[in-house]
Amino acid sequence: MPKKVILDVDPGIDDAMALCIALFDPDLEVVAVTAVGGNCPPDQATRNVQAVIEQLDPPRWPRVGAASPPDHDLPVDGRNLHGLDGLGGTNLEVAELRSRHPSEKVIADAVRAAPDAVTIVALGPLTNIARVFLRDPELASLVGEIVISGGTVSGPGNITPAAEFNIFCDPESAREVFLSPSTKTLVPLDVTNQIILSYDLFNRLPDESTKVGKLLREILPPAFRAYRQEFGLEGIHVHDSVALIAAVHPELFVTEEMAGDVETMGELTCGATVFDRRRVPAWRHNMEVAVGMDKEKVVQQIIRGLGGTPY
Ligand code: RIB
Ligand code: CA
Image 1 (tube, helix red, strand yellow):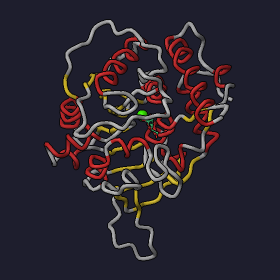
Image 2 (cartoon, helix red, strand yellow):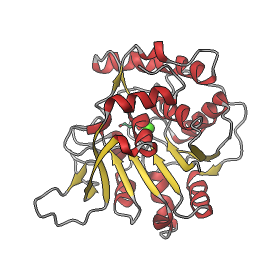
Image 3 (cartoon, protein in one colour):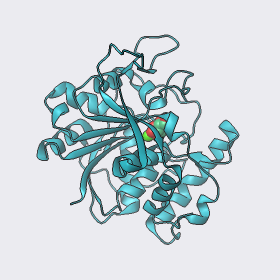
Image 4 (spheres, helix red, strand yellow):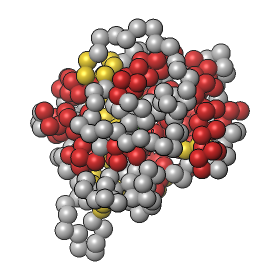
């Protein structure tokens, strides 16, 4: 029985890569792809979701949720890793903007339609999910699991010294989700930063005649350029693909039960994820956190999921 998933995304080149994997995985039923602002403004995120799905034309089209503005302005991400349009400046065409149901409504409807059976793979800021829980608190207990790409445990942030980007974009929503009674697994930068795909990735992509091969050859070169310019790296992180693999193949990851919360006020630490790891913690455990993985197998799963040639 395919696993029902909702992908909540802020495409975002690594979000798009995760969509390339999920939409063609026979073991997954992607019931919805819901857009959220983050790597690009909300309306652009919605356009990018539609454009990627149209380009990929998967066997089964998911419902699409439209991103609505967060309660606070999104930070300007000066790193520009994803380009001004969020997809490396490719400005992919969208045939037509279909009816735009708000992401939070699409998520709520999908969870209600299959109680305890839907995994939300949260690959962007947690704005949509917090709104779902605020409007209908019962849903937090009806979601099968939320797998979250974001946060840090002991490593540095990537948008500030203390904060990871998805959490930093909307710390209040992240806190709402962290403290909700939902079943959560966090895949933090401490783990996702361990994988850097080199230029050899281009030798392993599916043929350019395939939909995935064509799309990736458009959006990956700008990502490699941005990583070289920004970090001097000869490779790219693929945070969201790693988080997706954690949702589909949890056996490849080591997790620890932790008590986590989010700083929402600090001048220097806003968006930081904080965990009570004292010998006798006072906070109640509220999530599983990935602390390790079988890197080789995760990379193989990513390449295989893209329909490429594994290393
Ligand atoms: O910090 C990495 C996360 O922020 C990824 O989800 C990336 O797409 C950006 O949203
Ligand atoms: Ca993302």
